[in-house]
Amino acid sequence: MELKIRVVSEDDAEALVEIYRYYVEHTAITYECHVPSVEEFRQRIRHTLEKYPYLAAELDGKVVGYVYASPLNTRESYDWSVETSIYVAENVRGHGIGSRLYQALEDTLDAMHIINLNACIAYPEEPDEYLTNNSVEYHEHLGYRLIGTFHQCAYKFGRWYHMVWMEKAIAEHPETPEPVIWFPELQNQYSKQCEEIWKRAAED
Image (cartoon, rainbow, N blue to C red; front, side, top):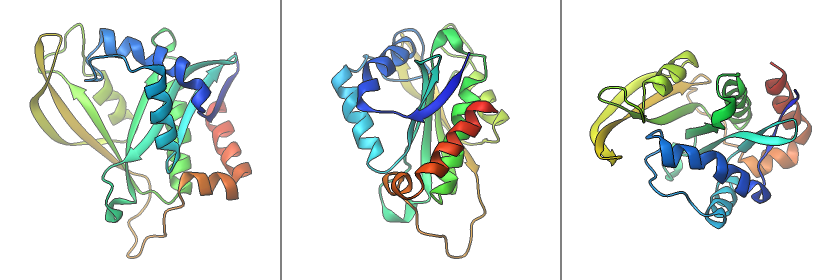
């Protein structure tokens, strides 16, 4: 089987919705309660790619996961900080695809001069059929650390859940950081380097 990591396009919206559908309908991993339309997903993709990377994993030509970054806050002082999100098709979880996607995202963000990664993660009072501790444990394995909890802030499937924030720094915090290279500019100026980053991550 051949894994490929590439930039998402709006044409991928239908495939991404189908991956996301499982998490909306059957888990509390996302607190979204209704599956977005394909057109809504196209708009989300378009908006994200205005500044940030949105990557897909293809296994033998089929999209099986995606990862993207979004602003932690839209104010300019937060430019070096992002929120990360990832979803992998339920039938291929546990095969390292998520880790490769995350590596591709991290390396891309590093090339953009992003420093801080933040993850907003659903967390149960007690693990149940909709939500376990796996996401937190997975992010800990990737080098994130827990920094805060919002208690019983989300209600889904007739029960209350927590939300936690985790963070990871992928570079030093210099006295004067280099300006961020937004993703479209990175692609335009360093397209070959980007392709190498994604190819390397897919092969690791």
